[in-house]
Amino acid sequence: MEMTQVTLTIKNPSDPKKTVTYEFLVDSGAAYTVVPETIVKQIGLTPNFRREFILADGKKIERAIGDAKIRYGNEEISTPVVLGKKGDSALLGTFTLEAFGLALDPFQRKIYKAKMML
Image 1 (cartoon, one colour):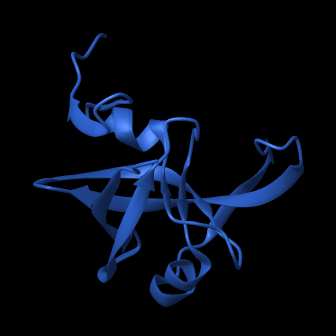
Image 2 (cartoon, helix red, strand yellow; image 1 turned 180 degrees about the vertical axis):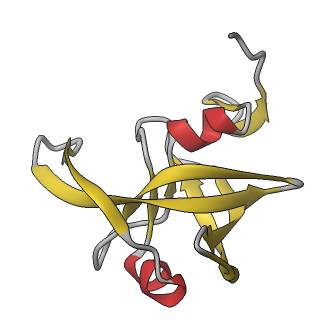
């Protein structure tokens, strides 16, 4: 199965000089973007609250949610992100994808500009 990956730059909103550029898997089944633990520590992202999630296999996990600035192409947005733990993959979730005005074509495995509705 072919996967869709994108390069994102993650910034600490409190200190935008702290940045990391990394490859993220586009996951249309994930609501939040997941920032791996190594990046969280490297740029100093901090938690705001916690959420419980159910994984595809039915397992329940809890993760901290924080804020990050994310750059994709020529655009940069602020968005809530899951602060990953050891072993968590880098995922671009639908909140962030839609905030950029983008959508995933699941058949072509490509990202495209979505028609935005208010």
